[in-house]
Length: 159
Image (cartoon, rainbow, N blue to C red; front, side, top):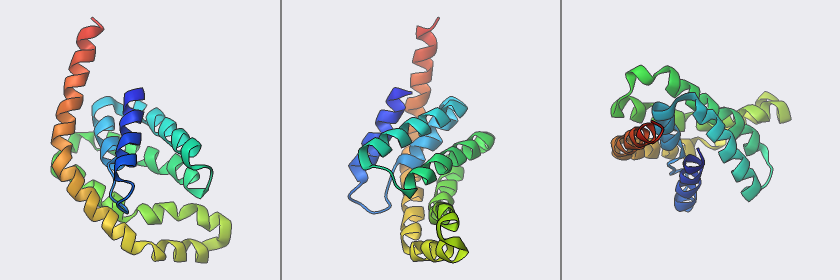
């Protein structure tokens, strides 16, 4: 689980200069498809490290429900697992990331603040969706292969 958090942090750090291009979504998809619901614990550890690194703000609350929501979705749809299914799913997740992130603003400033915050970010959500699709389409199969190999090795070591 520590290696998963390290990969998430390294992936996020590596791409942070490119707005809304990230591998965190893909990694959570792959980790959940490979290792199940214990990935939720990884999402909390990731959020904790991000909080230590970047400080406390509204995004901390967002990460506490957005990543587990994605993980539960992947877990429930794992029977449909394919590169195309998860590429499209990650695209939709990226397109609606801003809408999901706007929820705390409902409680801060009401529906008007929530709606305007979401609408202002739509161009970034479009980029986020397109980049999630492309990243998943290219990296899903190699990462699933690597996680399958890791699962196999860990099973052999525990025997």
